[in-house]
Length: 241
Image (cartoon, rainbow, N blue to C red; front, side, top):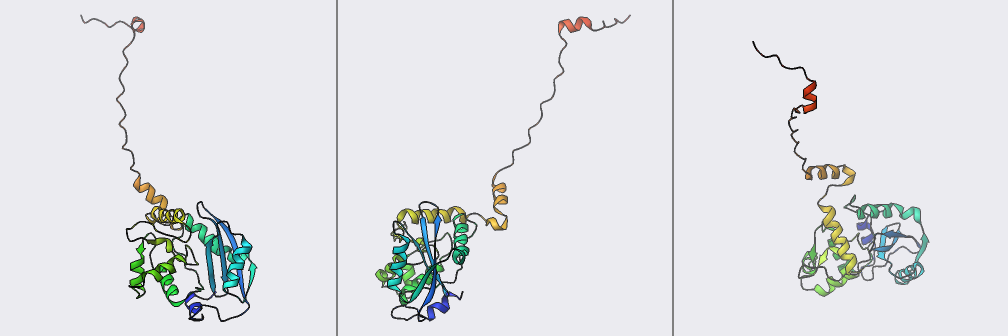
């Protein structure tokens, strides 16, 4: 698949609609740890379009909602095509992958795409505020539009809008709800202090953290005194003349 930059250049700047009609769009549903639940993944030949929480929506309704908004595509289920992305998400949830560098097809207006691209630059385990994002995209006075772009992010987790905190430094509104946001932030805080499992360094890190116990000195063995009955059996000592 081609990169996100290519996809963004080939969108209508006013509506964000792909230029190519009858595009094949593959989709798949994967299970994520609680409280994340089911994730809906969709991708075209240009890149991944959607990673979203399904909640109580049916698969049919999820596909229909996107088909109405972005018409002209042919939606097809594809476990094989999206399995690599699902596997990488599983690795992310277990801390073995911290960067998900996928080709993305970002569908949105110019400001929204700029905000989503800025969010991709927020490092793993770190956070930012809406005001900082607004300054990053050159819209320091347009906080409401920037916040709206964060809340309408179609690529949850991949575009890490969960790393956006409120002005008070606490987790604020999130596209998937506050419990999911707290879970993802906690996951990154927990694994951010550890090296990657794929580098075989986590075990070494844990070993270094656990102090080795000091060797215990063996107590000196005391010579047992003979019991009275045993003493009678011993040969009598000769007296000196």
